[in-house]
Length: 487
Image (cartoon, rainbow, N blue to C red):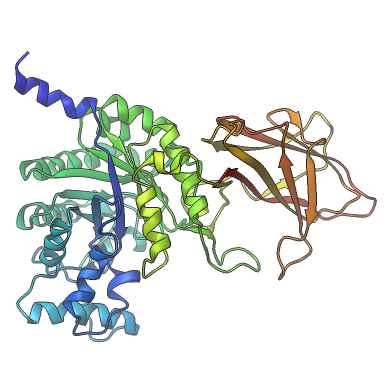
């Protein structure tokens, strides 16, 4: 075997490890700065993550109505507007224009800055719709999307511009932005026939990127069923080596998921030598919940998500949308997400993911909230969760299980088990979990004898009796597991 052939197979054997931060060009960047934008402010989107473990900066160059850079292949954001709906859009357009008026290329400035700071720069392109897309072709308005040759050709032109006309380090193809971020690529009735057409388009896009020494990434959905329903033949993409990495997510389901169901994707990707970088969201709660406002995930929560996804075999971590401007807490988290050893013996806060409207729109069902029907001892409600830590280790000081319940009273007979073992003998404190909605119940178990095991676990609940005339439905709202380490 020649040395050349060895080099050819090495990428298949060793998926590349990356630590990735994404900015969508809008919410925590161009929406916020007054034009004409100062170069220090423009560079700040790169500079804020420089010096952390982040080695790859991904920039969301597209929205459904235009591109956030100096494009000749499509429509630049705002270039077709007579007026703007909001001051933030006005800021974005005029900030970019102020750079162009000075003879500067906005995208080139960001690429150069990332490279100066030792980071790869990869643009991320949404694929569902684009500025100037004819309404008759747009699936959002009943059109057939990628069935039309013109739609596929237009997007290929943008890909070519990004990988050939700018010194980017590749391209990320965002197949998973629909439905919250853009229109779907296909109508449901066209999926079966046009799935091979999408794959052929990816072959061409991949070839363009590789011809320019670029990495090819793909944002995909977390489950095989969701990808199949959208027309994404992930197995073929992987087996043919059309992508170098996949990044699973549900766009705008912004709740951090400590247990994303991607074991199938990791196994398939690694068999093909393809890396997996899960996109980990930044929220613990959002405004979708009754009496809740947006609440960012804590560093302890982010550690738990990192640890779980490393334990499942992911090749690197990928996040975005952190509290802005990024402070020392956020920068510390970005450093921890690059090295699993840094968090091995630090407190972690695991929690079970909840449904959100955007998750439900795409069909991404999460375990909570869960109604607890009045049942027999043989009938149980089960909640899966994953814990990467060895909770029996001498270095763990204590493990706390928090269970939040709605419409529960002290007279209820609720049996709770973990992996089949009763928690009846564990110390349990009962309190009210939320000052604005004090009617719920928080059960806090300080676990000693019944501990989560490393890996997959199951919490089992049986509501075996309720007081007479209490007709409301009991609901399990939250499950949190906090693993504390000795100082």
